[in-house]
Length: 194
Image (cartoon, rainbow, N blue to C red):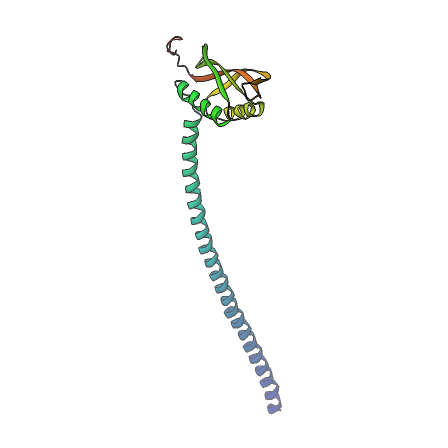
């Protein structure tokens, strides 16, 4: 009896040992496999961090360039948009003369008609008369209005076409008031800019 009692006990011991070995193998496999997946995840995170760091460096560089460009543009805008201290009369009328030549117009007169002053602003006014075909006069006005000068057309009259000269070409005549603006400081006298 003793031999038969030993046999089932041995089977129980073998089954227990097998179960313990299977459990240890499963635990070891989970630990080893888990360590591999954790290691893979860590490597993946390190790659992601490195890529993000490179992207951040590129973005920072682009931001720095954009800030430099913004600073340059602000300076340029400040200078371009600034109302001049003195109206550039000679320069402006040379500009108008160039436009008139380009559009094949004749300048008939350019006469100063007085200044107006407002708080912080001086307006110099000139009567200006040009002659030529109506489409060319319109193109002239388009160029005048799109210029960067602080100037405006304050009054405009266009007389109908009339035949001129021996060529018999029809010409319109445009009379306008050119207004040139400049800054007027609080301490300046109204008569100091003539």
